[in-house]
Amino acid sequence: MESTQPLPSKTIRLRDGRNLGYVDNEVDGWRTVFLFHGFPGSRFQRDTDESRAREMGLRMISVDRPGYGLSDFKPGRQILDWPDDVCELADQLGVDRFSVAGWSGGGPYTLACAYKLAERLDRVAIMCSLAPLTKPEVAKHMAGFNRISFTFGRHLPGFPRFLVGSMAFAFRFTPDLWQRILASQSPESEVTTILKDPVFRKLMDTDLREAMRQGSRGPALDLRLYARDWGFGVEDIQVPVRLWHGEEDRTVPLEMGQYLADHIPQCKATFLPGEGHFIPATRAGELVEEMSIRESGIPA
Image 1 (cartoon, rainbow, N blue to C red):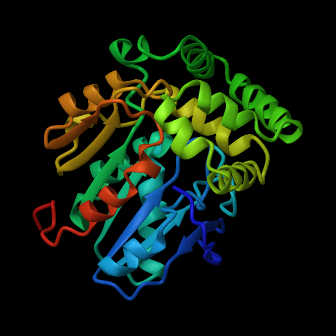
Image 2: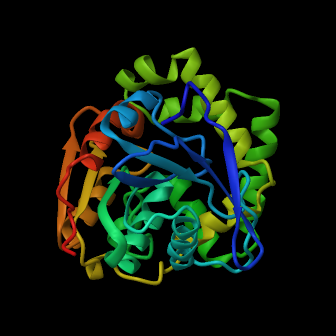
C-alpha cells in the first residue's frame, strides 16, 4: 500500500531520546488509524488512493518501526515494546483513542497493540499477517528458504544481520530483484495488476530503499523477533480483530491466517480465493471501510 502522492514525513522525539518517523495525512477527522508496515518496509506503505481515507474522515498515520526509515534503532527491543512507542506518538499528537492496522510483518506489532492497549483502541485489523513461528504447526507451512531463515534467525544471533545485509547489497545492484522475488511467490492475477504496474514498482523501490536507509540492523532485529516468542499469546487478545488473508499467499502461507483466526478469540476472518500477498494493495478500500465503521469494535 504505497502513496502515489507522497505526503511529508515527520518525526517526534520520544522520551528516551529516539526519533520516531511517520507520515500523517493530517485529516481533521473523527478517527485516527495507525498503520504498521510489513517486512521490510517503511512509513511509505500506504493506500495508493489517499482520497479514500479523506472522504471517510480518517486520519491515517503510517509509522516507521525502530531501525527503519526515520525511526532510530533501539537495541534489545521486543515486539511488546512497540505499543509503548505508539502510545507516546498518540499522546504527542493529542490522540486519545485510535485504531491500528498492519500487514505481513506489521501484523505481530498490530496484535501486540491489541493485546496491550485494549483500553485505547477502537478497531484492529490485520492483512496477510505472520503468525507465531514458535508454533510448529505454523512454521512447517513456510516455504523452505523462509523456514530456514527464521529457524537460523532464532538460534544464530548473527544470521539475520548477515541475511538482511546480503539482501540489501543485492538489491542495490539489482533494483528489480525484490519485485522478481515477490512475483515468483504471487498468483498471476497479482503479477498482472500490481507487480507489472510501473508506478507501483517505482513506489516499491522507494519503500525498500527507505526500509534500508539505516542499514540492516532494524530489519535484522525484526527477523529475529518474528522467530522468537512474541511475549504474549494471540489467544489472550481480548478485543475483536478483523483479518484478511489471500488463499494463494506463498510469502505468508494461508495456514498462518487460519491459525490466527482459530486462536484469536474474537476474530472475524475473510479468506480470499485466488489472491496472494498483495491484498494490502488490492483490498485497501476494504481496510478503509473497516476502519470507518462508526461503532467501536471494542467495548469501552
